Image (tube, rainbow, N blue to C red):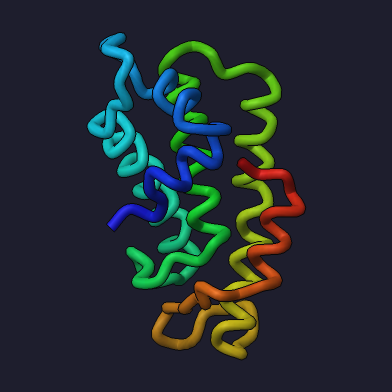
Length: 144
């Protein structure tokens, strides 16, 4: 299961027309879901590696809004990179998303489990898909 979907990509892109432009590598004028699904799979693999390294069980069974937003934004960043259209602002936002992720995850895990910021003895942590603080912290960061 992908962490983000077409509605998330459209929102992050600023609409269906922009998303279509980014995904249309064959210049058919159509949204290319195959390209999008490959890119989101690559991004979600990176997210899972990041989460796994920090003691989370992956893939997440319930996708928190912050992870959904990250997946969508990074999918679009990867499309821009592939097209050669990513600019300095895009690259700065990409770096900010990954730099803020540990803070967001700390709050999601701690608030969901009531545990300290270190993983429990079994090495896994869970997250709460409705964690309002993490969602708000992510959106205040201007990610998308």
